[in-house]
Amino acid sequence: MSFPAKKDLEIQLSKLSSFHNPKNSLEQYSTDPVLAAYVINLAFQRGDIQGKNVIDLGTGTGTLSYGALYFECKELTAVEVDEDQRSVLEKNLEKFSNKKLIFGNVASISGTWDTVLCNGPFGSVVKDADLPFLEKAFSLGKVVYLIHNWKAKDFIVSYASRRCTEFSYERRTLNIPRIYGHHEKNRMNIDVLFLVGRI
Ligand code: SAH
Image (cartoon, rainbow, N blue to C red; front, top):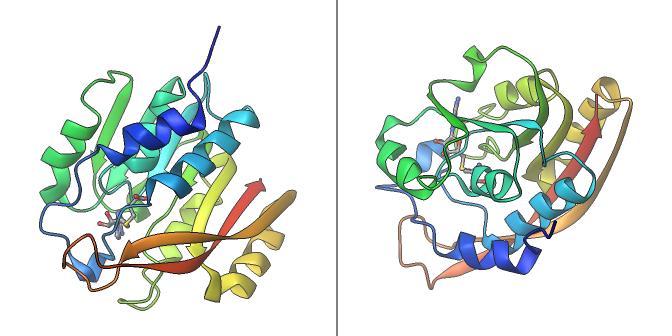
């Protein structure tokens, strides 16, 4: 059986619709296709996507969810607090049927999944908005793929060292709009922490 390549995924992700009236207070910007495809491809290579039950916390426009579905996860659960993104999310994921969309607060989610994908708010606009994501990321699954602000590295690494049997991390680049809500061409790179942890 042949599987889609990372580059194919990048191309598909670049065609997805973006946030509908994005809300700064929720730190709504999508992971760029290059970083998203990198994360999903790595998770796939490590055996954490294909045939697995995957949850995506703070799915937004469904970038990471799309990747998990594209690389043939068993079922994808996507959690998003903002109902205003429902139509964008449904449209972006419309070609997949093995998905469950939950519109609610990540703090209210319970259950067990094989793999957790988490790129939620960094807590840069509303202080501590990232804390419920961290709590859930390390409690809902057997393995977590987490993106956070590189500035929070020491905090996240200390968190992971308490919650994981093993983990690794690296510094990557996230390309986001420079001025929130303005034209896509005006973009900037920020350093992010990408952490993989086994619980
Ligand atoms: N994970 C996506 C989107 C990142 S933006 C991606 O990687 O492309 C962060 C997302 O988290 C936003 O869509 C925002 O609405 C959502 N969010 C913020 N607080 C939330 C909460 N408490 N519960 C669920 N979703 C939340």
